[in-house]
Image (cartoon, rainbow, N blue to C red; front, top):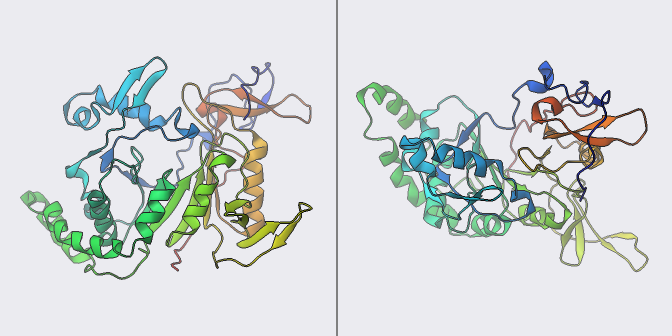
Length: 368
């Protein structure tokens, strides 16, 4: 992992084209472009799980919201505790029952990120709650729901359980309680929701409007991709954010062999260190890759080489690539061939990679 590089000398140019130390972002860099169009946080609260959690942005937001008081403050009160270096998750998770049916009343199709203030597969979240949220996802079929987790093992076990579709179907009976009764001013909206909701059943499975992803910060966590590949899903994607070290999705360990998640091939390593094709399950490559640097106090830099390797692999294999941001650090050049990293703040760092933005998103889902 990279250590903190020294500060930049004046006159260095950032990836955004601005001088280091100039806090004014350009128009392109400051655009609010995200891999999602809306967020849905029916649960809140989490716990530190791996190195990528150390400076969790959601953890700091939860602490800030808890101080607001009122209904919003009550949602997040007690979910974090203050320590020397800032707020830390307590491990408590909480369900906001008034938000469970939120997607059902948004009738314009959106890409909805699920539980960014928690983890849908947190060990303290009851399976019954996960089932109910999936019943909502199944009913609100006009949206695309994007789930991202670090707890890939529980995710894989949940979707691989043959009883999961049946449990989700049974939870459909609770959906009426999420939309009724409603105030008279929303009665027309409720009628539209009733017409839009698809009758619940066991098919289709996997849910065609659910995109499953895992969050990975370094190569030591790349095995999460293996769990993802063995999970039934319409779209499988990986978010390398914060990217803290080089990652190699082309070398996902599966037992004593490897899987190339870019090319969709299995291989082994012989006694001379050479790759040897081997037989394996017919897994398709990843459908999407998102990458970005860390933000906030204590943010660690992301080296340009790491993200360029991901970008180049995606381009060569046709996998959509979304570059979210550099984070607090940006690459700077003083005329030499070697780039250094300079802390300039998120807004100045921007999100240009080699002179352009990368906003690629899968256009259609494909179930298997």
